[in-house]
Amino acid sequence: MILSFTSVENEKLLNSIDVVRDFLEVFPDDVLGLPPKRELEFSIDLIPGVGPVSISPYRMAPAELSELKKQVEELLEKQMIRPSVSLWGAPMLLVKKKDGGVRLCVDYRQLNKLTIKNKYPLPMIDDLMDQLRGASVFSKIDLRSGYHQIRVKEEDIPKTAFRTRRFIEGFFKIVMPLTQLTRKDHHFVWTEECEKSFQELKEKLTSSPVLILPDPNKSFEVYCDASHQGLGCVLMQERQVVAYASRHCGMTTITSDFLEMVKQKQVQDAGLNKVRELLGFERAEGFEQDMDGVLRYKGRICIPQDEELKKLILEEGHKSKLSVHPGMTNMYQDLKRMFWWNGMKKEIAEYVASCIVCQKVKVEHQKPGGLLQMMEVPKWKWDSIAMDFVVGSPRFAKN
Image 1: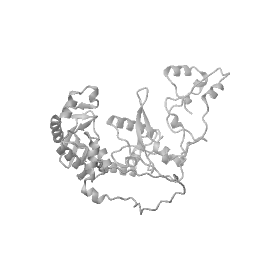
Image 2: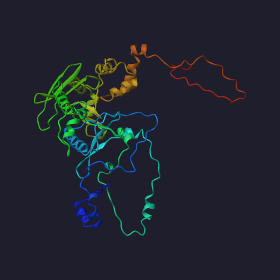
Image 3: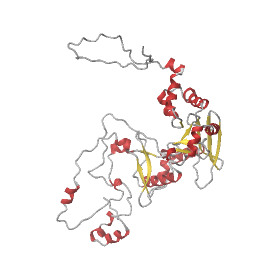
Image 4: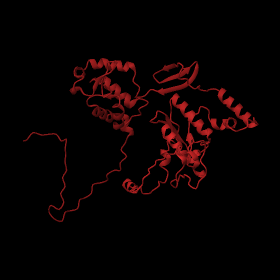
């Protein structure tokens, strides 16, 4: 095993110890390669019947991608990782350390769900402390890059595969012959395989369309266009495309014209005007006015008691091309993310119930109750008691 020093002062102190000074190879500055083969190897035992799991890589900022690339190249140089065509794949992420550095981690949560857990009793801390009685020397050791000092069984290595974002498909496989030439203690011999790799890489880089890698130190340009059907934009840098984006207009898209109309209707609503006067007080808790002057309740737009405006919202939420006649519950959940008004849930239920299309299509799928059956005659008085409640009947004056 390779041990690590905890600080510079500890390093000086350890160098003064005879056993440490005689075995300095156990305390190197870095782990330079794979550990030697030992009797103990890490294994991943899967639950019978499960198959490979592959998760797409997480999106990262340019600075994170730069750090990720740096650490991956270091691991490749040390041969602790290698290019893979495994059916398994886990995403990677960067975690900040206490000292301000960044640790490269792999999210194996989905793989862990498929593994057979090791079941063994954990010792009680009190029992461990009792075993220290009589000891006069206490020591603490730490392994440098401890997880990199345990080999994985050869048959389980494909399960540990991870994925990184590369803008050229199969980049590792393409450049592998060229990467071999850059390693230390390797003779530079340009073979036919290297020439083929070089030409294929040039073709990939020059073929269209290719997105350039953004430079955070340079300015960006955004070209956008919009219509009632959708939105589209292109992010460019120095007249080269960095990324494309587009989306369809749906229930979550609120235009500025609609907000202006709601704002005018709110001013005409006496109830909402009273709420404006109470803004900042406990009686108007949850209400606020945004930068555009639109009154909101817990972030949702307050709709005044205007029948035409509410009808417009209900029709958009129920009959538009993107709504496809949702039921009362789904429609209420969709609209309440953006709008609020008194009696909103009741009005949505009444609107859905009055929809002719829903009445024709959404028929009952429950099994019919069948014919009424005769009840058994009780064998003794008060043996069986039943009561029916009839409500909603009209009231009549007493004779």
